[in-house]
Length: 187
Image (cartoon, rainbow, N blue to C red):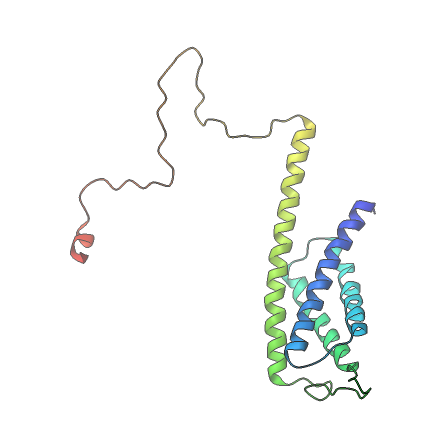
């Protein structure tokens, strides 16, 4: 694999890992939990390790949603395993008291993971659409084909001069004539 392909794959994996970690960290802190820097670093490594194998090709929602859900579960367990220590060295208790999540926490995790997966899938589709468009333009440029510009839809012959008329805008709807009976009754 080329260096550019690896760079692109690692950049996409980094974006996925940062989004996963940010989602898990925000949810954990919002629920009243605390996280150590060590937990954040290991969580980023977990998200990154999960994303690198899937970053080789375009990912759809069918790929992103289960991967994001699995990483969220792993990060939840990770943040629950290493509670932060208070100033006196006594560990701070986890807000829900152990590894078993409550029903509300499961719903919140599922909702956040679903919305984030849709967001990531749409971003992924936009990225690949942009890259395909750039590739088509680059191929046209390198092969010598003219890149389509904003040419006049009607070719003007040089041997015949005619006055220029402004074309009506395409979004204008012409409604000439009397109003319909339904519109007249409604008024």
